[in-house]
Image (cartoon, rainbow, N blue to C red; front, side, top):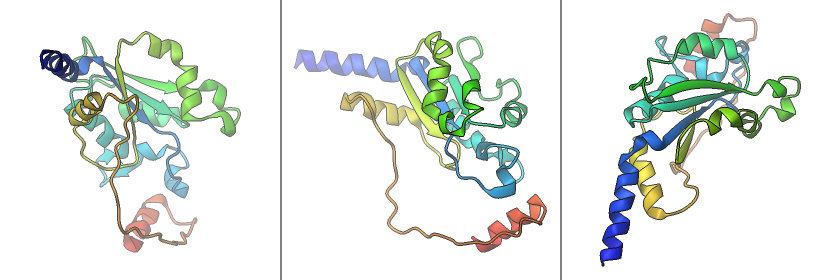
Length: 196
């Protein structure tokens, strides 16, 4: 019983220390939406004219008290840099936290080798400088509200090496929509919303 209480106390201390968590927003492998993502990754596509899709993931990190964040960028780094600016918007504590953009320069020449895993390996030195015990990797193309503190708590109590967060969906629809590529980008959005 005493050993169980010690284990519980030690796990509870780990859960409360979100300073030891690195949040990675993954912009790789997002669906391509024709002209909407021709000059920017899906994470930088605007949502309702004010936010970009990446903002939901970064907001989830911030609201979960994760102040160490990296963004894995597959392509169009300039669009990501322009949207994120200096990154201080999402980092609540700039003394202990940061936001870094990670890009695999070697993957530019070959799409085959421009993967999220290759990006992490190419930036391993940067990641090794960071002091973290846990890593949460989240895509930027899901609009959701997640408290990662609860996810991490469940992960720590399970004592597993890897946990996956998912939502079971009973019904889904596949839309076969033909877009007129000659339309301006804002008309494509209207067309997409209309068909959806």
